[in-house]
Length: 300
Image 1 (cartoon, rainbow, N blue to C red):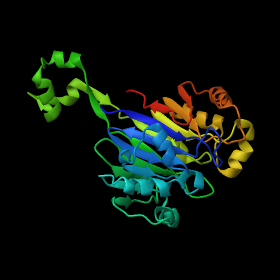
Image 2: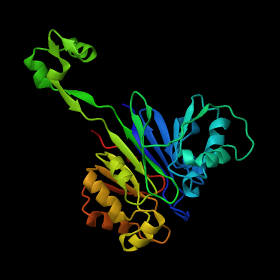
Image 3: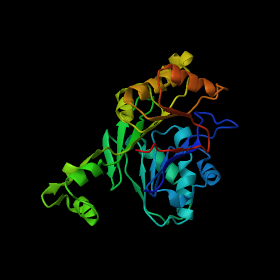
Image 4: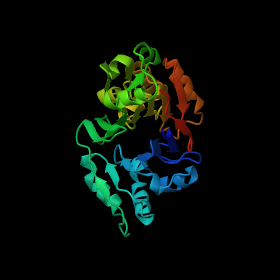
């Protein structure tokens, strides 16, 4: 299986800092690359992280605030400049179609790559591939915003003791897996369900049904925590989450690895986000995102 990992390109919120670029996140998944929310400066962050335009197969934009989308113009032009040899698909809120078009054609360039636009207008599946289904869910922000989730199809885990009980060994194991039945023994009799991996991406939002739906059972949850808990009023007023709120969502959803990101420039100590996340009762693996960090998707 190819590497599955999150490459963090930027972690700031509205205003970048000396140490944090505007948003940008690349999910590597079985030889494909999905770029989420390319903010200003993403193209340079890709270079620093060793990410090439050829690595991109999809671009997913949650909403059209600048820190999540101003990098689109440069990324799209780079895809064409480098003559990426495969089609690229872009997902974004349908209500922001005019913003996508302005960014796609912000300046003159020669189009060499097929860029397919698949806007998001409702909750549900956006794309189905052999290795994942890409889903979207509406969030709660002053402008329309959608979160995304990759769900791997469930598979089956072979149980050696059951194979032995039926006298199945050697090449017959592969035959049973391919054909589903061997001499009256079904694959279900000698295996158990292996749940597919899930990765959720939740950016600017208040608490809402969409947040919980996306986070449910996620192996890896990348979620904004713009504010600390003492500024919960600001978070609610501006359509954001606090560290404690994000961690409580992860706790209740059974998330295995929580990645907090999208930090306001008002806070100087990132350790406080970790402290508040733990205080909210999240006991799983926790990362406070930093630019150029790499986070592997937890193994099954």
